[in-house]
Each structure stands twice: as structure tokens, then as C-alpha cells.
Image 1 (cartoon, rainbow, N blue to C red):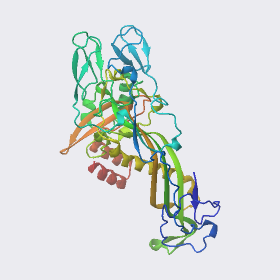
Image 2 (image 1 turned 180 degrees about the horizontal axis):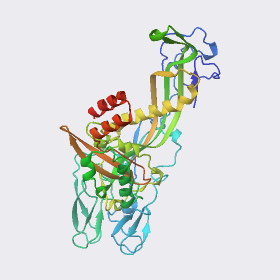
Image 3 (image 1 turned 180 degrees about the vertical axis):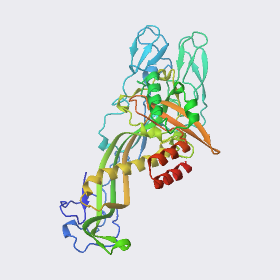
Image 4 (image 1 turned 90 degrees about the vertical axis):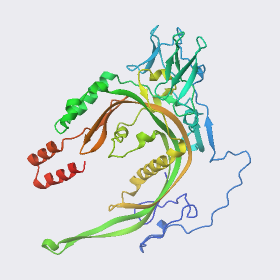
Length: 450
């Protein structure tokens, strides 16, 4: 990481690799007359002429698609490697597939280092998209026809609600293992390792700790056994980026008070400096929702935001796509393309950049206010992946307004978070009995706006 500070004592002078021609420095509202010359912003220079690009050089802005399909499942039938049976399910205790006929267990190969050519993240250029992350073909129907590899019959399956079907002639189980360009088939899947019983126990414990303020109707109707295992669609992104941030930093010189009684006022004297930072950084397996409904964070309609609180997932252990991992679980289709998700990615990259430079401005003890930001994304790599979540939902309506409350459990780590509808009366009574009158008024205002 490279950084450059203007005017902060104790920070060694360092030339930023970003020239003013690439990122013009904003004119400070108030310049520091005591700024040492070695910390001053370099004078503007005309941009250097770029070297001619040889005709064989790749376009850094090009979008390429990599073949990430599981070639082993090319015929659409997933057979047991030992006996050839198609009766296959996921065994959550181990995260492996098990043949229900001969009890053989195995797992698909992990995707890490397998679906893309090995390349350091800081050398990523352009946009590389996996087969399952390709743009959705709106003309593709949810109803597809599978040809049985056992007897040759054709079986119709609605992939909006299921990813497998049984042949009505030879009883073989057919699965949608080839990428279908409608968002239903990802590149990889992270199997469940948490059982249904463990998820129920986690949800019961979570709700139990909130019984005191929970709505009575919720407690009467609470049935955690109804929790369902669902694979949610995500884009998992690797990225190579750089960012420049500008702002004003303040160093406190002294503080003092004037006046007395109600007219007493505190003043602060501080030196104000223009601060600039530049950082090169990479991200590895950044997870972003690829379902528009799940990405909708309208707190007045649902509590979708709790899905983000059970992150992260150990995506390094994801395996190549195999529809048998979905047997016994539900799933949601991806309905957003890469370009629709890119603004969310860029916003998160800027947040990461600000976090990266934060330790370098600790000397400004009055803080730094970033006023300008510039992000350059040099390269990204996109994989569509299913991630496992145990989900309990409850629809609560009160005062003519309804809301869907969710309690979610990470299907790998057991991390649990959610929301329950509260009883406003019980919450206010608790505030009156344990707090001050002012606290009770504040609580009353808050619950009135829930």
C-alpha cells in the first residue's frame, strides 16, 4: 500500500503513484501556511504519453467467459462412482454425497484453484465470468426437458421449484447438472454441514432469549420445526483494484472553555490539513447477493438484512456444481446479471479502501473527513455459487402494516441472527420499571415507529 500525506508531522514523505493528471487534487478550502514543502502536493505535470500497445496484448477491459461446468456430469445423470445408482443425497453431518444403495460417500472436487487458471489476484485484468454467472437468457423457460441416460425417456422438470426429477420408466433420478442460461444453475455449491436438528436448536435458543419482549402471538405460533434449508444465490467475486481518497484532517492543538453557567462553551483549536491516500488492494471471495428480492433491504417490509449478519461462509470449501447436493433442500434462482451487481461491488470496494487507509491517518486526532473518492477496478473474476442457510420466517401484521421476520442460521458455522416481532406494551413497561422517565419517553417513541 502506498500513501501520501500533506502536512502531518511524523509521516515520512512519499510520492503517490497517482498523478494529478489522473486524479485532480481538489482545491483546499483553507490551505495550511505552515505545511512543510516535502509534504506538499506535487505540481501538476502533463500526462505522459502511454506506450503503444502491441497488437497481441489483451484488452484489460475485455469480458471473457470461462467454462466452469462440471464435465463429469455431462449426460445430466449423477451416478454413484461405485455402483452406478442414482439414489444420491447429501449427508449434512459430513457435507458429502452418499449413495442410498451401497452407502458409498464422496464429494465433488473443490472449486478453489480448479475452475479458473491459477493467477495472482494482483494480476487480474478485465472481467472473467464463469459459465453459471453468464447473463440470464430471458427467453429460457423454467420448464426444461431432461433425457434419461438410463432408458432414453424424456422427463419434464420445472427448475423454478426443483432441480431433479425421477424417470417414470426406469426410476433413475435425473438432475439439472448442465448450466442453463436462466440463472438456475450456478458454478459451485457450498454443501450444508449443519443438520436440521442443530438448526432448530439454534433458532429455539435465539428466540428463547427474546421471550420477554416478544409478541404473544409470535410465541403461541412459534414452530421452529418448520425451519427449511435453502440454498441462496450469491456472486463470489475476486478483484484487483486501487483507490484514491482525499479529505481534510485535523490535529488538535488545544481546547478551552469560556463563559460560565448556562453560557459556558468549549472551543477547540486545530490545524487543518489536506490529506490524500492511495491504495492498491485485492479482494478474495467477496460475496454479494444475486437475488433482487434478497438484496431488497427495505426494513419496513422484511428483515432481509439479517442474511448478511451470518456471513462469512467458508467459500474456499465450495465444490463443483452437482444438483444432488440440493436433494431435500429448496433453492432460489439468481435473477441479476453481473452488470446489475457491479455498483454494489464498487461500493463495497470503496468501503474496503477506506478501511485499508484508516490506520495511516491515526495521527489526525480530530479525525479525517473524506470528501472525494476515486476507484479503479483493474480486474474481476465472477463465480455464481449457492450458499446454505437454514431459514425460519414469520409474517406479523399489526396496525395495518405487515412485515416478514426472519431467523437465519449459517448452514456451515451455525451463526444465528434474526428478528422477532416485539410487544410494544411489554417493552414500554420494562422501560418504565427499570429506567428513567426520559428513557421511557424515548422507548415509547421508538416502539411507536416500529
